[in-house]
Image (cartoon, rainbow, N blue to C red):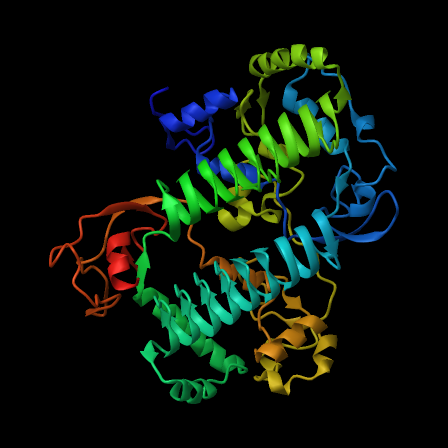
Length: 597
């Protein structure tokens, strides 16, 4: 096996490490090692995923008005509605061309990308009443919701799986009647729960498991009738909770402040991992050998993976679904894919490289939008023998005639698509959420930027004129255009105004929740602050080390029991997504378990 190496990133010029295990995977996939560091590589791939920036457009095939990932006046290619894109009314092979050895590979691929029709919004499986939702699978009644798998009645949420009646939530699953849930699982009738599991009829919790009727508490296990960290009887709790006016917007401001303070001062485990073996990263559940990975569940032998579920042997991939194996350097691997590399959206794809929007196919190279095909190059059909003879020549040609982008960076075989080939601007994609840049920073790095369209609506209700309490809101609010409290002054892609839809108002009334004062985009970015970065720091356990002060007073967690290391500071070290300068008290697993479990 090749020894570990340190390389210099072609993009940011910082050094990055490649492990022996990574080299073993590259040899298995028969690809050269990467030339971009993992962080730059993820931003490069994320440029191909626009979840939330939607425009009104018109299907270029049937003429139907539809929401689209692509602006009506800014796309060089046709845009089809979902029905037309999957129909037999057009032939994806008609855009093919024979490979030209006098032109660089990526130049030819870019021509195909700019000519080929693209689907307006992406919906796998059966999606019902999801006109204003994108990247969904088997979803019903979703509105301004993105990255949803198997859900019903999902509004203003992102990366939510197997949920029902869920609003304003992020990275949550298996839940019902959930409001402002972040990274929470199997929660029922909860609001403002962060990193919680198996909780019910509770709110304003952090890191709580199997709790019922609990309020404003952290690090609880198997709790019931806990009010602001204190154990109450059922009668005491019901009396206390009845005094909290959850329907008031002014009261909520104070509750959010209290929750933020609570989260800062409680103990934090170095990573949100459970049932793992030999894993590093964050938000990892029931995995083995997951290294430098985030939001990974039931996976094995994965490295630098984000949002992977029931997969095996994947490396440098964002989003890969059940049954996929041997997947490298791409975004949205779908389900049941195997031995694929350098792709932007695939589903049940096998033995293929450099593809975009291809599914249920095998042995494709440099193809876009093909379904149920095999042995194709640049959307041109070949025999098995012709295909196998041509692929080695193309790979050599990619090395001999590299593509050079506008920043002078060279791209050979084994490298992901150059950023300028993406159909999206940087700030339209999830790259802006994970690796935010200003317009100047993005353009200096060779990324496109799209200035927001001029807003034509007129605000009819300012946020400070809204009734404080949900009980004072009548149905006339559904006709109002409400101004966002940020008024476009933030860096959250503020829409400056928003409307309330009937289903949303019904949910607020049912859950006794005040109307929001921020637009959906600003609310989304506020939730993103809960998510740790896709980066790890080597740190030592903070248990026994008094380093956090506020105006001369100690803050942070105070131990409740004696730990194995006694009075001395804990010597345990770990990799964590909590940066050293953060205020939270971060413990190793042993010290955390001594305090919490």
